[in-house]
Length: 224
Image 1 (cartoon, rainbow, N blue to C red):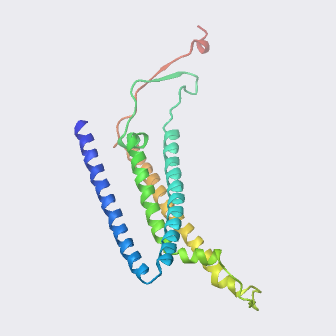
Image 2: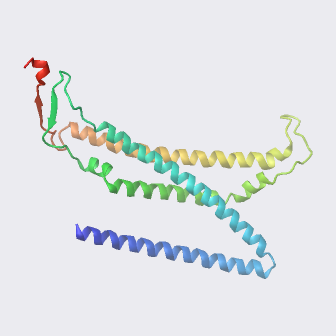
């Protein structure tokens, strides 16, 4: 146990060091670019771009992380409900379990490790989506600062500004939501597939044996 804790602490320290170095590398690059923009008297434009990118990044990151983590935790709840065993038989006899059936997968799903893994998966998915969406900041700004062109489309009777600003923003929202749904579906399906495959193996006798039970007849049913 002590060795495992030391190993986990070592991995955590390495991860923290890598994250800190990555952040410093990004900040150094941003500072260099800001110096170049500022030398051309475009420093304010650069800060506007950065604020928009960071704001959109954080928004997509937080929303994706919350949705992923909630749905992955729902798989744990489903697993816990499925593992509930009856307290009585159909005849009304009380069931006393002498041995608790434990499998590595059940221990993982009910333990702290599953929480850490689900947090990691949620963070990774949020990082992927937010990184891809941050470059679309100009699409968002064009939508919120759109202006009319005064020219109407003769076929659909829409202002041409709809095709220049609105339509690209709607495509961005659609693509982001579909990417989120696809990644979430893959993650949840993988969890359920692992659960189902282990259940099949358990039924084939590969898993640990079923728990022994002892049934007692209620005196009220026997008339004693």
